[in-house]
Image 1 (cartoon, rainbow over the protein chains, first blue to last red):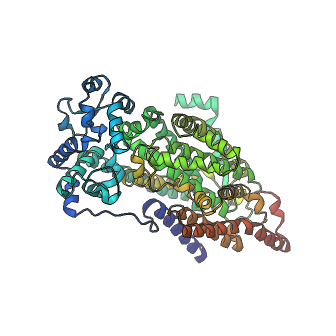
Image 2: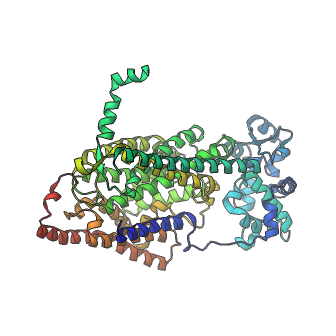
Amino acid sequence: MSLGNILKTIFFTVFVVGFFFIIWVKNPFVQEQEYPLPAKYRAMIYSDNPQIIAAGRQIVTQQCAACHSLRYDGVYPLSVKSDPNYPMIIKQFAKPIPSDSLLAPFHQKTKGFAMYLPQDVYDAAFASELHTLKTQFGKVPPDLSTMYLARGPEYLFNWVQNPGQIIPGTAMPPILQGQPKEAAEVVAYLRAVDTPTPAEQTRRFEMGVATLAFLIFFGIAIYLYRGRLLDKMGLH
Amino acid sequence: MGLAKFIEERTHLSQIFQEQMVDYKVPKNLTFPYAFGVLAIIAFTVQIVSGMILLMYYKPYDTLAFDSAALFIWKVIPYGWLFRSIHAAGANFFLAVVYLHMFTGIYYNAYKKPRELVWIMGFIIYFLLLLTALTGYVLPWGQLSYWATEVTVEIPGAVPGVIGETISLLMRGGYTLGNIAIGRFFALHVLILPLILLGVVSIHLFLVRAAGISNPDGKPYDKKKEGVPFHPYVTLKEGAVAMFYLALFFFFVFFYMKEFLPATNWEPANPLQTPAEIAPEWYLKGYYAIFRSIPNKFIGFVTFNLVLALILLLPWLDFSPIRSARRRPLFFAMYIVFIFAGSALTIVGTLQATPEVAKVGLFFTALLFLFFISLPIISFIELGYAKAKGEVDYAKGGEQ
């Protein structure tokens, strides 16, 4: 290969890798809003500690569930739960979904299964409660099931403490203002809903490493075999 | 062995293999970027297989779609998370590979006679692929699915009068995106478009074999002396490349899905709440940046469609008898301008729309058109050069 060709190869490789790095990994031209999350509370959120998660779930079911649902863990707004039809609708329409083991202790009555109501059934059966919430807040307070994945821990940690600071004029009240520990517990619980258990995470990590190792090994093996074969055929 | 012999006697498979794979000679100097074609086929296969699994559990209905993807496929179905990750990352990798394949084709001028049909079929694949990606993007029914689709279906509305509105209405299936749109997009995404793609890809492959593979030097070569057997010379080389490609792909699948399953899409679609930033996916952002930079919507619409049309017409814009950027310094320079403008526009598409960003977008749009305008001029200069050197003959056909 001539020097020109080497330079061209380097240029195009750097160009392509750089382009995909910018659009897929880190875009230096876009400033992302950052929210503070002290290391102490970050450690709490990522601890996978059943006690912290239990405390978080208690806050969610007692305070957040005044208005919000968390359907993937069978948590429904208090007004919905006090509907006389609620037990019957759960019995008729709710489907048991396996809780991750970190959440299973909360579902002892249902043998570790969260009772999930399909969205259409939920909307229809509790239309009047949802309508009351809607007139109260301007919209039905969103379901919290996937909020951890959608907003991330930093945002949520600040949001539950002081929502008005992030979106001025929001209908959400500052329920946990000045209570960072409780805020961290809530986020830890939301994380537990959306993240596989530590054992499952380890398993997925190992699966990934094994897959990569196999493909790279196989690729190198093909390449070496090709070299030997071409030598034999006199094609090199 | 009995069974192998039984099949062989009836199908002559080994004879076909010998004729089509071993006796098929290709230039020895094929460079690394020639592998992108094979990688595109692999990416297509990955999409079809992972899509089949997802199809078993996905529900195309507005109140059920989000839960079927985010709860059942993601959490309940064993390995559902894996197949959803593969399908989501695979779509991005497929388009990335197809873009690289196209840019390779432009670099080596693989669209010139006798390969014009290969180029046109390739362009049709690219266009259908964009439609497939677009229709698939709406299916998880998250906020980004909803609003990115809303933005996209509004773009034809830039055409004045009834026509634009009708196209928008047809794409949206009414005045709001809802069940009709999900149903249509679902059918298009899982059956109609992939089926057409399968056919068009087969034609593309047939045409590649019929016209013969191009070669990076752009010079005619003697197949008998310089050619090497396709199998095992190329198959094993590209087999190794394919393994490394899959390794990179699975690295993203297992360890970095943040970009391919974006955070905003983990919120269910809400027609009443517009997210802060809405933009199409990266593979459309270049066109979107052009559309957005031009103040007049209709002219913006025409301009980005013109880019698509000019890509399709490359074989006729570039009529120079000399092939391959390796032997065409002027073309090489303009090619750099072209890829630079194209990538810059894609990145401009990721920025928030401000007047300054629009100016930058206009500048790169101008650069992009500079490439297309320069092609006939370069070709004219090179035609004269080639004639003076007596190199014109092989421009009129022949194997190269």
